[in-house]
Image (tube, rainbow, N blue to C red; front, side, top):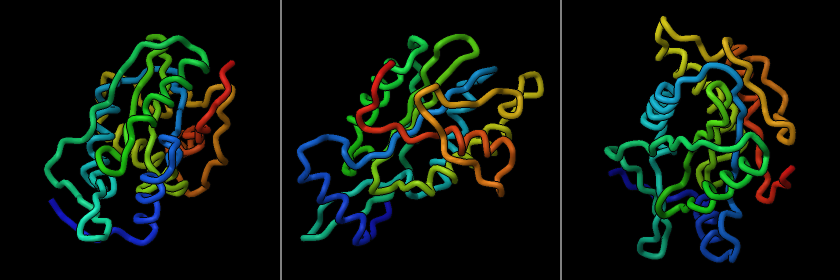
Length: 203
């Protein structure tokens, strides 16, 4: 376990989360629709590797001696990728997003993920993180890292993700413009990791 003093911004988010009556208000949640072959175990291993590389994904926060401390757990296993069968409509995605973000806390779990399976080749990957560790630029990095880690874990007998899949958002979730410096596969992920509002209307 490594311990450091939280930055001023991190301390502000910690205190805001403690004082605000609405759970999960300081969260960013992303969803990406994946149409095509997907190997959930490979995606889970990709995220586990990303977690091991980035201290921010192994961080939690706690008050100590009148200040806010950042605790980086060097030994804890990464969060599991939960896989749930779900109907193919926005209401199911919205419900999963709300359930995921409600479980986040700077003191326990600052981020989480879930994979919804709508059919054999139809999934939605949802990632939610507290703003104490996450911002919009982190999403672009996540898109690139997922692509590289997933492809590095390739089985020659299985179809790649991407470019072998059509990665896109659901109809109500429009992704941000892709960054030109990313690889084509990473651009799919970065563009499709659309921010899901705290109160998303169902269709």
